[in-house]
Amino acid sequence: MIVFDNATKIYESADKKVKAVDRINLHVEEGQICVFLGPSGCGKTTLLRMVNRLIPLSGGAIHVNGKSIESFDTIELRRSIGYVIQQIGLFPNMTIEQNICVVPKLLGWDRKKMQNRYDELMELMGLNPDEYRKRYPWELSGGQQQRIGVARALAADPPVMLMDEPFGALDPIMRERIQNEFLRIQQNVKKTILFVSHDIDEAIRLGDKIAIFKAGQLMQYGTPDEILSNPKDEFVEDFVGGDRALKRLTLLTVHDLFFKLKHPRKLNGDARHSGSPTIDMETNLRTALSVILSSPTGEAVVADSKNNHVGLLNLHDFEALADIHPFELKSSV
Amino acid sequence: MKKRSFTEKVVKAGLLLVIAGVVVWAFAAGSFQLMIDRPGDLIYLLLQHLQLVGLSALLAVAAAVPAGIIVTRERFRKLQWIATNFANLGQTIPSLAILALVMSYLGIGYQTAVFALWINSLLPILRNTIAGLENVSPSILDAGKGMGMSPGQIFWKLELPNASYAILAGIRTSIVINVGTATLAFLIGGGGLGDFIFTGISLYDTGIMLAGALPVMVLAVIIDFVLGKLERVVIPKGLQRNLETL
Ligand SMILES: Nc1ncnc2c1ncn2[C@@H]1O[C@H](COP(=O)(O)OP(=O)(O)O)[C@@H](O)[C@H]1O
Ligand SMILES: [Mg+2]
Image (cartoon, rainbow over all chains, first blue to last red; front, top):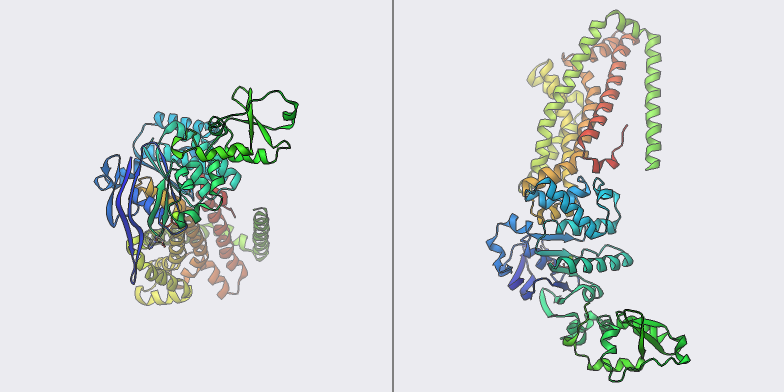
């Protein structure tokens, strides 16, 4: 668990003071991803880098797993926290294996253990360990490099990870793929992750919680659904965008809606439905809506995981969403 | 990439052509006869020449690399302009003028020549050391620091290896230049292959002159080649894709 307790950073230059981080109070639960979201210059990076003391606090405190960060030796604190940056920062003079094993080596692991860990992490990243072992960073694509960057941060199995716009430099397709991969990995490793982003869609996709900042201040902290369905003020509302209702649909699946319907319409083998496209239970509602809008019959056939057709969904059914309370959601993002 | 290696080939070919031309010329002028007749002289001067270059280079590396390292440390960054200006000064004064200046203090002879060559080699090494260290990408250093490397580890494992290309290039350049400049050492009694060259000039004897000039050229090419090979050994493999050999 990470706790920010009135955490403050003031940059002082000759003629002025900049409150880059202004009395932030925040609890991040263990094993959750908390996305720091906000426009450029709102203090996300500063707050993140305060956690591993790359930037010293001007006031307040930060606790990691119950202990104040000030009570650790700086070097040891950093070795116990994974750190990933947008520029990746792989070491060009080292092989991929050496890059991944930087922290284990600093911690004095023996060779065998490091090698096993390397193999394990590469498998986790979906990369062939032997193919890349002796390669150098410049030989890899941007997406592969960023995977190595994430693997490197995971190497010593730190309970906490700091990630500063790690996928920001990737093209949209690669970004989405690596985000999904990242979620899959997180389901295995269950780290407590602070994740900086300026992209609302990324925040919705990845965050268990989202913290929205403006000029160093925390504007709202909540689950993606809380923030989308209930933006606290105009700033948050503007930031999440006018299509927030549509964005919210990405958080819900066909399953969530279908079982909320009072009278779900069963399939009766009517030939009328033969032209309807099929959607499965795990499809998110935004995609489902899009499918229904372009369906020639105005309907879509709902299929369960065994591909049995269990019912029909049309535009009217979406009205039932008004009854779905955010806190009852069971779908995982 | 391809374009560069093409220019490289042209330059190399041109260089070999020039050397071949000089060899033919030296042959016609009787330089080889001279070298065969008095092999002891040639070897003696060659070794002296190598010593001048080697010793001055060693001292220059010993001074300029640490100086470059110090002035790129956060604490001493303010000293950087002093160091570069000092080294710039050493470079802008013509080699002959340095010789004359140094001579008036140290007298004539071997030490004076070494000192003058030393001054002459400082700048390329210092400048490249500073540039190499300053150009190490900040994100690499940030990542290293954020992962818990100590300042010493950051220096030895990140900064120095990643600056090695530039530093070695500076050393190589300065040594190769000094192979030529060291011919001037003869003028202040420092010996070296300049002996043949300047004797030849004053006697209007092209044969003697080329008996000095040709070995200097060949020496420069060989040393450049050897140092190029050395770079391949010293520079980390991950950085060698931008290594060009000439
Ligand atoms: N080293 C620094 N010195 C002075 N001001 C800084 C420094 N670093 C960041 N700032 C200022 O602090 C504010 C927050 O910066 P940052 O944390 O990088 O924002 P973000 O990551 O949200 O884009 C900005 O106004 C920025 O100009
Ligand atoms: Mg930032």
